[in-house]
Image (cartoon, rainbow, N blue to C red; front, side):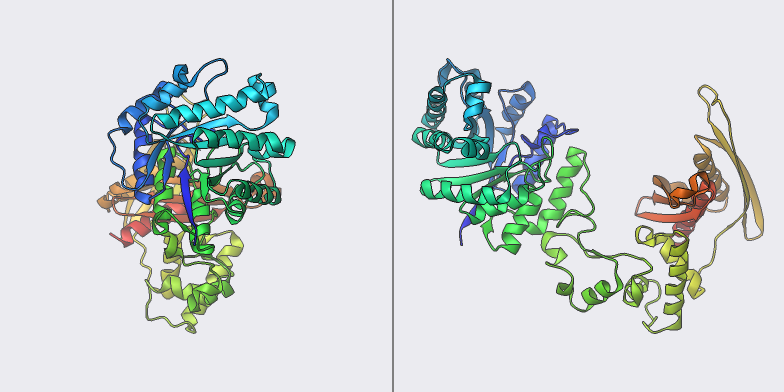
Length: 519
């Protein structure tokens, strides 16, 4: 079984993605996370491009890595200069990394039209730059920029660039699909040809995702003989991003049985750690690490997974550190209902009339626009109401909201008045807020705090509104989802109405009831 080297470029290529900006401290934290995960190489930046990267490498020189080799990235020396005199090349040595990644032009059009030099001059620049870095004790990885486009335009020349890098002392040649436009069949054929021509060298693949084929192209390159895969850990990068290592690593290890670095059981946690530092989101339906990657909704699917997980899951979610999720809906069936309510009523049987009643009520509410897969707290209250075990802690006697326009300078735009009743005692409260929903939220909690001081711990952390009947314009029914947190947990509740204020109040009231039920 051949071993595949994993090369992470989150901190260099990933940093070129729109909206991505790493501080020096961010980069140090990501290096530690990637090293803990166990990738072979971490390309951490271009020390010749900006002072921040140079500062990072100065600080990173004090790191002790357990698994990974740190790499500095840069270009070949400039035209009309020698490597030893080139500022960019000097900065690569100053970075003090054991590995240096050098990129050079392998597409003749770029040589003559972008660099404005002859093809022969470019060959000499590649050879001399690699040779100089090797003579200074560096392991050199050569990135053949635009290789696939260059190969299809002028095969002989693109291969001569690779030969120049080998003559200079590079032992890893990376074929870059820099524009991200090469199709899988071409990547497969070209990589196989290069591997046959350079049997003593390690051949790598570096793909961009402009056609959505980066992972597929990288997988086919490995099948064609490549043993070094470059990418970014969560797929971030310029334009459409790069090969996503959080997808290709489990593809290689779990699906194709290649040996490669990385503890896939830590994949979910590591992906989220890096996404958090990068201040970006992981798509819920992303393979392996998405929150919905192992989420099941259809009744037959849920029943099958409960009996035999392999019937509807290609791998176990635990293999990549993820978890299985069963989603509530009108198509979930009784197996799903039993799974969800076992914490509330463990004595309930699958064929119980109460189970049928819960399912029937669920279908009625979903027909109205409720959506319980994202509102477990409201579902728990629903189950308890059907079973007759729900005991409300309060009732809302009346409420009224008013808005003001124009908004007073420095003032609040709305007010809310609410009357609640607890055990026969009424409390009336009026509050100003930043909009009617905020005012109503504040008023409800202020009134109830008189009876239940513990709700002071609650914080509304998210608020979403979805229009359900687009053709009904302003009379449309809306769905409101509210996420609430306290010191110990987070829960989500839902409300549906033609009145956005009423829908919000339903969700807010459920949120408080859930908190009080668990206090």
